[in-house]
Length: 165
Image 1: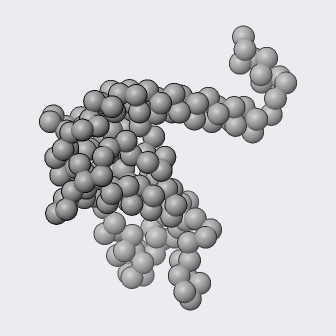
Image 2 (image 1 turned 30 degrees about the vertical axis):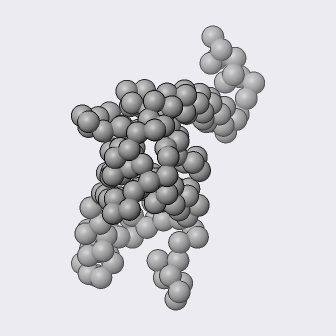
C-alpha cells in the first residue's frame, strides 16, 4: 500500500533516492554494530583480516563486510579501521577493492591498512581479470569490446594525459 501511495505522489528519481537513503541507513547501522563488536579485537596481535568478504568467510580470519554473515559488519568506505596500529599480520581482499570509489575512499582504506599492518605484514589484493580490456585497448580486432566497456562503465573524469581513454 505504501508503495502505491509513494508511486502516486513522488517521481521515480525521488523513489530511487529514498531507496538509497534506506540502504545507506542500514549500512550505517551495521557499521555501528560492527564497531561495537570490534572491541573484542582491540588488544589482539597478528590478526588476519579478510576485507570485503561478502558471503565467503575464511576460517581463522576476521571476516569484514557489510554482509550480515561477516564477523564484523563494517562499512570499509569509512576512514578508520577499529584495530590497533601494527596489529595485523595480513590483510586480504579479493574482488572487493574495485567496488570502493577512487581516489579518496580507496586511498584512505589503503592508508589504514598500512597503519594496522605490523612491520613486514602483507596486504594481498585480488581484482578481476584485466587481461581482456588491456588486450582490447592494444588490439584493433577487440576494439568493439573495449568501446562497449568504455561506453558503459567509463567515468567521465578518467582520462590520460593525451585525453584518450
